[in-house]
Image (cartoon, rainbow, N blue to C red; front, top):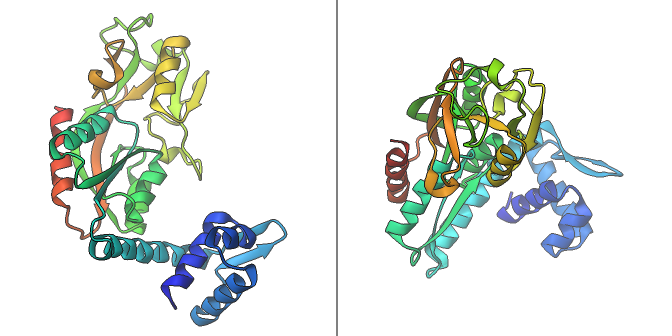
Length: 298
């Protein structure tokens, strides 16, 4: 088994076909097929199922590719740190769509500067947040647990060798435009919100409601609009008087003063925390980022 073979099979998995992978990897398709067959013969099971529509990863192949990604990611880190020499150090965080996480990242960059580091702040879906930390694309991930999703997400973290560290427990709030008819209420209920559309972020692959970014994901909303980014959610809050459910931690420096939070009387508690690889030690930048996150959450 060689590192090159691992890169080949990852290229095939990402491309979905041998033909596309061979073009991306700049090798002939017969050479690529031969390399994959040699690897499959060595490990004793098939990594892919071939069909006229391309290739799909087998169940055993999924597990193998998870390890392969970690090996390739670690090699890339070694190469960057000890071979590239003058390459910048990298620091990346993945998070659900939280303005406080972005604000903290901005403060980190402002304090550290960009002379020595290349930064990545990835606002993304819950499952991608988990995968990014697992696959070494991000050092940390920011997400929440509650009574509904805790068992499912905790099992997912266990399977991916990740651990969750709580940062703050928050009561669920309603986030809406300050011109919304309900914006001046001291507290809201789900019955109050019934006439208005709920804005929710796309869950992504698997489409499991346990991976929703919002609490009450199983509530039978009469009107529901799914979005992929925070800016679109804000536009819909103003344009169609939509609302979303959140932790109540809002960064007005980023979202502006036009939006506000109102407590939800029946929302439950969101426990916001960070993910890291089990047994790993946070880098100095990771520790500094968490300091900024805690400050932004106060």
